[in-house]
Structure formats: C-alpha cells, structure tokens
Amino acid sequence: IPNPTGSEAVIPFRLPQDDEVVFCIMTANGQVVHRRTIQAVAGENRITLDASGWAAGIYYYSMEYKGQRIVRKMSVVR
Image 1 (tube, rainbow, N blue to C red):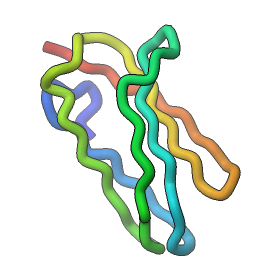
Image 2: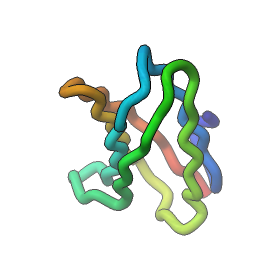
Image 3: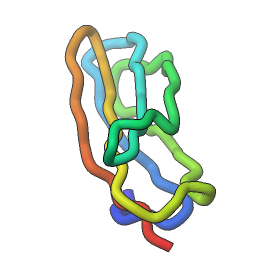
C-alpha cells in the first residue's frame, strides 16, 4: 500500500500463529534486491519498505511461511 508506490510501501499480512516469515523483493528478471527474515506474531503484521532508491518499474515480492509461498506484483513510479 500504495500500489504503485513512489518512496515508501507498506505491505500488510496476517498470520494464524507466531513464526518466521522470509520476505524477498525481486526485479522482473528475478534478481533479488531485498531479502529479510521476520519474526512475525499471530494476527496483523506489516512490512515497511523504503523504495526511494529503487529504479521505477515492476517488482515482485514473496513471503514464505511454513513451507507456503505467495508472490505479488508491486509497481514503483517516479
């Protein structure tokens, strides 16, 4: 949120229980530009990203939790 983003993006997510989440951002050609492991809690969580130094374009972010992975698209505009 927002999508598209210009400088800061907030990605909300919800978990059924406390656990580790692996979060990655990749360019459209698959290059990983950001990766971190988060100790998330049950319920609502947020990841805040500073995208001010990224080039404009399409990025994909993924979140892995207990062997499950989701991938979503994110646009950065200038």
